[in-house]
Length: 102
Image: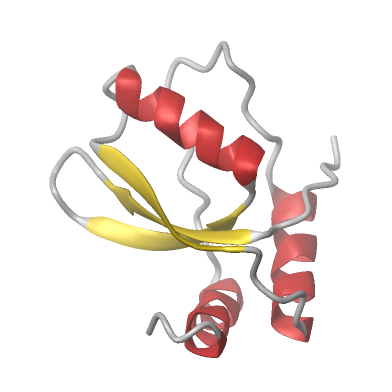
């Protein structure tokens, strides 16, 4: 099932092993990550930047996410980390740089 997520923020997710990664998400997905932290699936999530510009890179990454993943609902029993192809990771890296995070 194709999703229609509009990505509007950058967050940092800390896994239970203490490692972390950056994700481009939205408020609904951030809420899911917060719920995952409460349930112990991840250690922590924090928003680094809200209302990021809709650059070409954000739109391309949005397309990748929407075509690749089904969004979890509140009944989730695990936290699904969005695995990235090398091309998708390159888009995230560009988005981070555009927003002065990396």
